[in-house]
Length: 126
Image (cartoon, rainbow, N blue to C red; front, side):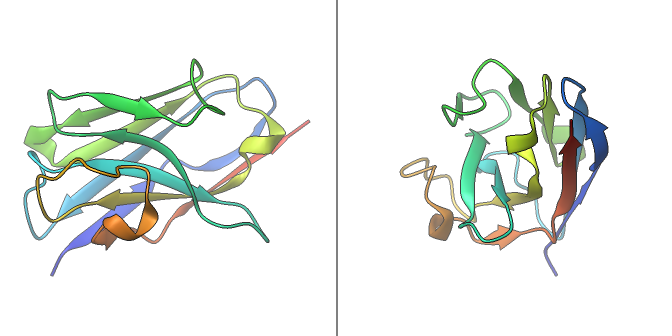
């Protein structure tokens, strides 16, 4: 059974940093795109960042460029999200996602991802 588990969320003040982790079990995703999405209460799930593969390209939503960094560790079958200069607008449940193929098309579209974690809460207070 494929399982993605996020960790690292919490309550922080504006300007602080957090590092989210996602570890996958059940299959290897080293050559498949892995991404982070987030969803705030009352809003649709939105794209945050994607890494196409362990040594591949990365892409970010405009709202987090320059503040967030996504990285991969193929040996650990994991993906990370370093979040700096957090703002109240970043408050959301953050989800790890992975594709079941090597396709990198439409990397920002939620429905193109095959596997999802349960999410980890990030709350940024002023």
